Image (cartoon, rainbow, N blue to C red; front, side, top):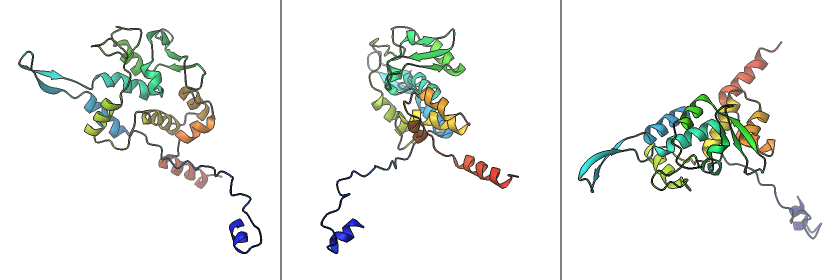
Length: 218
């Protein structure tokens, strides 16, 4: 409207020209479907026959198996990649069943309950370091998973997906099952509820159920 005023010589400048436009968040949240999860773990657990040039014999290897416990941790806690890779045994309380994170992105400590599956998964990891997820050859914690995780995604034919999207998956599944957004916020460690709302998006089935409530309302 102001530009039209300039064109008609009613005003000399646009008073809103220097105001920064609010960026609309059009990023589509990507989450893992159950079928994709099955494909992902199938590749992670897949066995390969390779030739050992030192022993001159064939052997069976599982090059991506180390990702299994890491991905399970991500899908059962919603933890960030850095939080997972920096996880230490002292942060896990098996007696009372929770993980306590102290150095978080938000700066606030948080406790995440252990699911039965995650408890069993972590209990079966050999403790060879203070860190939970350690390279058995170097005894050093894993620093980056990008290359290996990308390979697994390619082999599983899962497109447009990142490790961070496992976190989106957790938020989506919790909200889909009716978990209160404040609870989801506490689990994921968001400083603002609006961040949690961005991760959680309407599921078509839930929207249909909501409309059905209106249809049957008396």
